[in-house]
Length: 326
Image 1: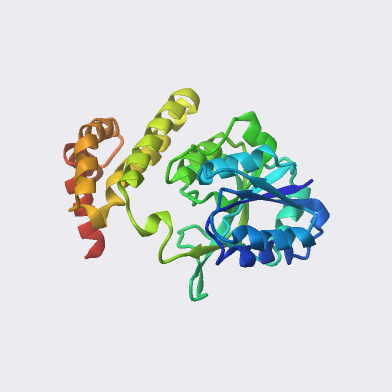
Image 2: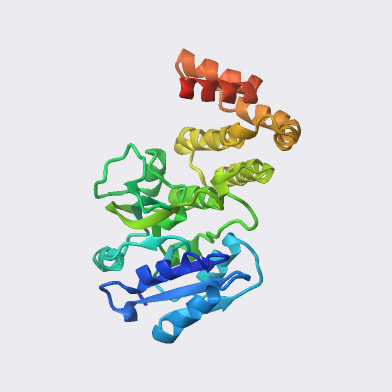
């Protein structure tokens, strides 16, 4: 089996038919890929729709589990995957009509590549489409995983990656259970450890931007708490795996995550939930931020900004937001 598509399902009755149609209406043999549906205890009629597809297509596997969240649904789907490569697809998204032909053609041509990376097309609920906002040109190239990461190619959505299963198993790479922003933690570790990433130079994935229901559409205290948890996880990863010559670049990524724990909550800074989060984590954030102040590395302006953040993370974030709006 060449490729396993892993699709977690929870409360997507409105979207799952379009997702599966896009997966099966491909100009590619169903003998070369499998579709693993992970029913994460969905309470709606999503599985009724999926059962209709399973009667038509023999390459569907259905794994039923009690609700454990997206991370565990992906991990459990990975545990039964038989494909050489895996592709995590969200059940409210779609793939383009020639995606499997493109992806599997690359797998045939470059069997030693550990990660294939695609840009994504954003689709709103009115059907408007646009390529994701990125400073990177849509061009084909092969990079070391850490170079992809350090050159600031997009990594915050696991759906963009088609990953060699043996590489994931060798490095024991799984999604962290029970957190928001699990893609960030997974993507950073996965990319740093990969020896090569082939950038497709085109989009093969349609990402639905929902006005409600997504993690980023409404902040909760758990969003910021989980970003701190991810920061701690990456700190442990750094001490075990990150080479000395990569520390500065890796630290830049970690600093960004740390600052996002406050910045992402910008519409909620006056709420009690944010006040509680900030009160409980302010001292830790300031202490951690201080390690990123390296006088000989930064120009005066950037050094002052880092010092400012270490003194008052919230006021720094407010200033950043103000400057962005003017």
